[in-house]
Image 1 (cartoon, rainbow, N blue to C red):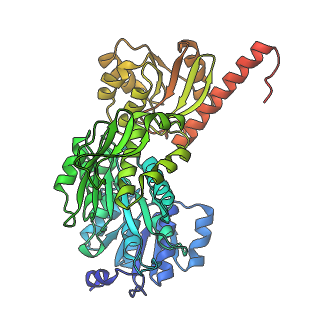
Image 2 (spheres, helix red, strand yellow; image 1 turned 60 degrees about the horizontal axis):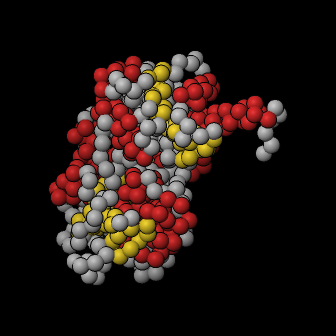
Image 3 (cartoon, rainbow, N blue to C red; image 1 turned 135 degrees about the vertical axis):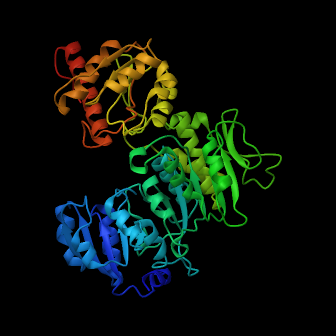
Length: 510
């Protein structure tokens, strides 16, 4: 009976009253799910190991129950609750005991994105239909591409909301009373794994979708590279209009070829080369669209130029790829080339994404702390060949050998951070012995970046670059990649201030 009932719950206006739902995790995603379900009239039990004070206070206010405690086993309270569906936050991996229990017990298992899809008609457009969904994933570039796409769509006159893994829960966007024409949804591999567990009633049917690239990441969570790849591939399932893929990344092309899509959906390629008749690419420094040109067999439409992108700090090759992918998604929804050009003139990258912190005393300091895996770090190294490379941290089970043997060889030196540095140092010894390697040994987090900057300033050439692109997560020494980047930037500015004081004999004026 529970499974049959769940199949009827495909609208905000369905009968959700009394549905027993267990929500796992009480971060921003978990709270949005609990709040939505309580508003629908479901019987909601929230289980979390910990909770922010605000969420802990609000759960009973919205009419749900909260139980805090260890979740390394199936709590008796969950068994007694006998849920009809479990809505899990993305942090709960497929191997988690509660997820395994849920599946073994044939209890419905949803992520927050499936719940949002089922209730997407809470606020509708003028024609009575809910917003279109555009899905974006990839090992790297997801957030930038999501922001770019939403900005282009908005410049083209559509009400577009970036949401999902970008930090704004999809459920919050779905319930926004202002309503939207398009939801641009960034999806992590964790969220996509949950989407892959959907029954036919809960499957997403996106307007357009893209997997930007694929490289090993989150292998501990997924269990294998193959499982990670399979999760990413779910982004294309049921796509109606445009399956956008990276021509330079064969894995994304194969995903599109293997995907079960809606009849009539087109495959749209992008890369930095000359575009074919169904592609976007670059010709003589011009970003060109041949996929959505009325005469695409013979000509292309100009979107912008590399020179114009350079003025906005957007000309790094991997950023250009993100721009082409976003342009393909926006063009599929009818956004004019002129609107895309205007959007790019004012768009700026977020902090910690190949961000130039300073240029001083002949050295350029670049913060790409968001480069938390080898694929992202390789892109940064290719943008700044010969840089002094700040690398290391929590490797998340990923081997850096290929990165070091390829792009890592171009570094003029490597400064290795992290609590455990042995694997990184060994990778250089085996695969790039000509690159000088210095381990940054400090006892306190507060000292790490101060020491990095001191060392880097002493070895960087005049006209050179110091690049923070760690190819690793930050949690062994920092609270987040943002914390890591901010500490790097602060250390750079303090070094500049000290140098200015030494030069003038007095502290610099601001």
